[in-house]
View 1 (cartoon, rainbow, N blue to C red):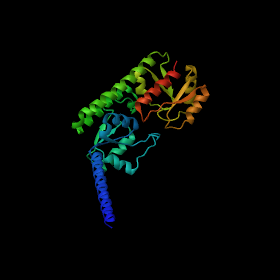
View 2: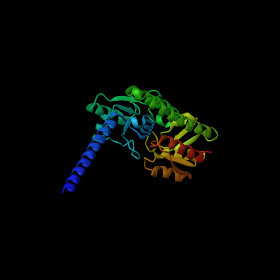
View 3: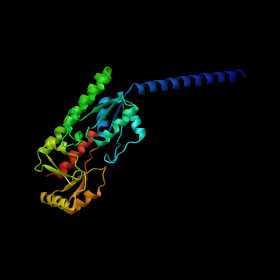
View 4: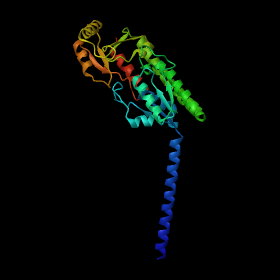
Length: 286
């Protein structure tokens, strides 16, 4: 009887200790989550760079998920609410319509969210928001991200600077490899279906030839002119976005004897995507 009584006491003590430890763990974990900076952004390439710099000190909410079409995207109410709970919202540009519609909705929930335009220090050309596709501009954008994280979390400044330096070093390396490769090519253009690569072309002295006209499929006469141009150039590849319907690009490619390749303007891993771009341009350009 005594042995059974002692056993019950032992079990109660063990359970009490386990419950105490579990509660303590949950409280510590909750504190750790709450102590991190909450950041939001619109597209995954920026989310990737922000995470590279912020590391475990931040939580990032991304609006447009991998594979989603940014031109038809509409945020759900719960997404808007999550973004409004962030301390910083890194927007792409003031020329991006979905962001211009989104920001007033964010402020309906929370007017204290700090809005940072990541294109402000790099300049916008022809109302084209795709500045992140320029590795050189992305280095400047990374500095803006660093500065904002340090402003809000000064005590972890050294941590952010170390991560920033490592990230920019890798960006510069990939940039130099692209510059070296493309300088050896006689061909100074590449063909895309959807125009997004003008800033990338600026970095390396290239020309983007886009099939679409102002984001729309060209009229029949314009399409014939494009096809004749591509035939005269001897274009061997048309680059399409994986977020868009590939059929129009396939139609043009088959008419000129070219193949369709993918270049991703919204990669979830920015540095790996630069390597993929280098590989595909090397294979397709003379």
